[in-house]
Amino acid sequence: MVMNESAVLRFRRIGTITIAAVYFLILVGAIVRASGAGMGCPDWPTCFGQWIPPTEESQLPPNYHEIYAELGYAGTDFNPVKTWTEYINRLTGVTIGILIMVTVWRSRTILKRDPPVFYAALAALLLVMFQGWLGAVVVSSNLHPLMITMHMVLALAIVALLIYAVARSQKSHFARLHLHAISSRHFKLLGLILAMTLIQIVLGAQVREAVDAIAKAMDYTHREIWPTWLPWVFYLHRAFALLVLCTNLVVIWQFIRFLPQNHLLFRLNLILGLLVL
Image 1 (tube, one colour):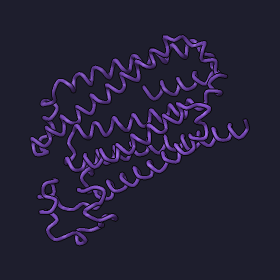
Image 2 (cartoon, one colour):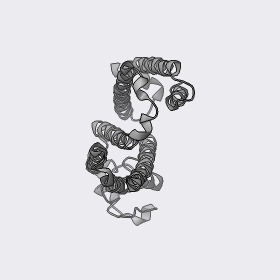
Image 3 (cartoon, rainbow, N blue to C red):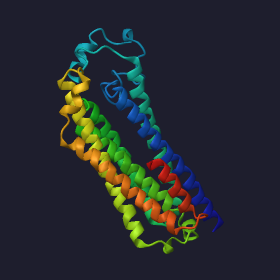
Image 4 (cartoon, rainbow, N blue to C red):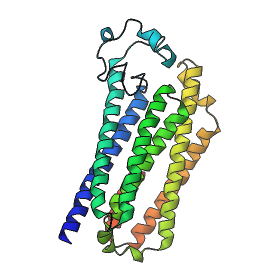
């Protein structure tokens, strides 16, 4: 029993580290997206045909504009900052893959005790492998908006699976929280909020796609009139954000109202309320 609990503890530790690392990867991906570094490396898995990317233009072939013309480099000069930003993003992704493999390896020790934990971790590993392939498609498609959206949604799915695996491995701890005292209606509301949040994220990605298309059509000039060209999805995204906010606040209030102040979920809901606001 002691050995089993020790195995669970080791799994929780590596699982928690992996979750934090995936969130960091999402942050790095956002930086890549915001800085326009997505095509900093025009090929995959190498970068300008090299495993370690160049740091200056002199390290590239003289005709690199022609070589990578179809990927947007016909009139674009080499930018080492963007190149290394994208390269760090890739290295972080590789690190995540290694961490998830270790997570799956650790989860096998509790396979008999709780099979869903192992299978959730394994599913996360399979999705990471698919995510790596999808990353190559994103590059080869020259940052096609739909591919970028799929890439982001898949990252969220990986996080969800890892969180589920780590949370489920702590069933004995949750049993002491007396969650059975919480109405099933509250859990249904939580599921609704998760679904609404995912929809809002996808809508936001669609807005970003529209902005990219407008920027390209206007040659990245006259930014002040871009909002007037935005499609209906922009207004839906803005209105839906208010609905998501109100739904979150209602659920947070319900939990705070019915839970004692020393309850873990009470404190977590206070933190969630601050984040939402």
